Picture 1 (tube, rainbow, N blue to C red):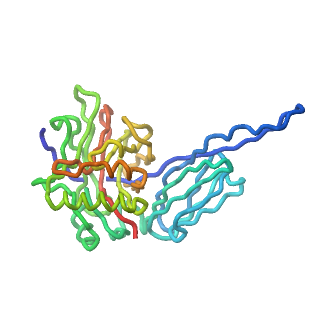
Picture 2: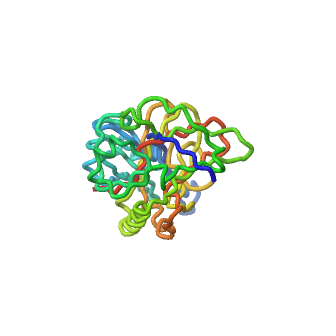
Picture 3: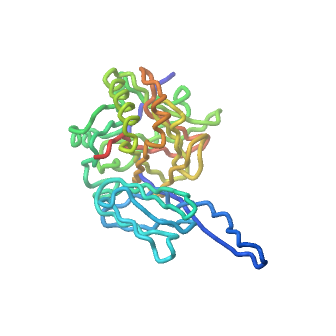
Length: 324
């Protein structure tokens, strides 16, 4: 297997919805309520700067709650609860839950930046972080909270392109990185070749990193609601990307309009060439992470982009983190 190394990631948000209806018979029988429409939300993820506001739409009337009212507020709109207004208060993350009368629930992850993705405050709001892609300036700024380092070092931690380095080629990687620094980021483009998929993995062989990976695994399993994976992404063209962690495809999730192979679609981002950030709750993958084998050669993060020739995979600010 040929190792290919590139340095350079983005932010986004997306969709969920909900609806409800009840009719009566005109005959003499008892009225029978129609089955409740499936609840979905739009979006299913939000990234806001402090002070910004947004609206979440639902397909069904719902009640709205949020896990941390100091990060953002959620207020039902004047439409019977079929949408809610969100206002960002301080940097951090929170989960908004919509619940219907029939007991359906859906969530929207809210990420609030102090100054906005792609620049501003370089201090990461977390108790501990485990970086996969993070520039040296930001790493130094946040050195006190780095609990383990999975970054590429070209010695015993590598970025591998499968197979034989043919499925991605180096991208342009123009502009500043996610935190507004001039250091690079992972910039790749899906190449034209004779297979129907493209993939990569951040392979860990460093002894200290393997120990840190085991510690991270145990911490996630012990307290999954505290842990997230942050991904920064940007692009100027369409493309779907699947990710999974700890070498375990059962943790798969997708960013884009559709899934590549497996796992839920977390959301998409505007293809405007600007950085967009995702915070993926790891609680949904806790059981799969618990079953992952931690050993030399494990890919702490994998990405697949399918046969989408020319699709850009630009990543930065990729790190696992524990909330305060």
